[in-house]
Image (cartoon, rainbow, N blue to C red; front, side, top):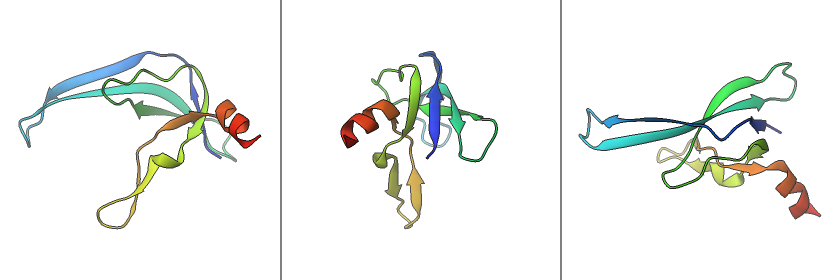
Length: 93
C-alpha cells in the first residue's frame, strides 16, 4: 500500500494564462511525502487540490479508488484523491 503523509495545510498556488488556449488557470498544490513499501526513505510529492476544495488535514492517507480511471486511449490515468487510512479501517470493521 502506498502511504502519503500530509504534514501541514499550506497550499502553493500558481496562476497564469495558457499560451495554447488563452484561458486563465490556477494550480493549487499541497506538499506531501509518499512512502512506498520496501523503500527506506519517502519521496517528496505534490498533490493537486481542486478549485473550491480545502487542503488535506495533516495525517496519513492512501489513494482512493476514484484516483484511477481509463484514459481516452485505453491506458490508466491517475489523479490522486486521498483518503485517510483511519477512515479505511473504520469502514472495514
